[in-house]
Image (cartoon, rainbow, N blue to C red; front, side, top):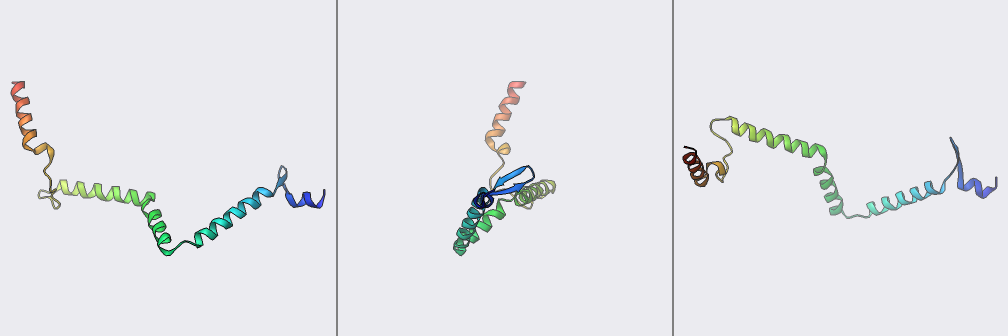
Length: 106
C-alpha cells in the first residue's frame, strides 16, 4: 500500500475506511465552535433562554401547574382567581337561548 493510500484510509472492522469524511466532520465541528464562540453576550443569552423554555420539562411543568391552578380554583367555594370576563355559558344570551329551547321542548 502506498504512503498516500495509508493517509486516506484506515482499517475498520469490515475493511478499509476512508478518513476523509472524518476529517471533514472535524473541520465542520471546528468551524461551528469558532462561530459559536464569536457570538455576542445577548445572542448567547437569548439562545440559553430559548433552549430552556422550549424544553419538554418546561412545557410539562407549565401544563401541570396551570391544570392544578384551574382545578384548585374550581374546587373551592369562593374562587381565589376570578375571571374578569363572564363565562359564556352564564351570559344572558345563552340563558335566553336555553329558555327558548326549553319552551320549544314543552
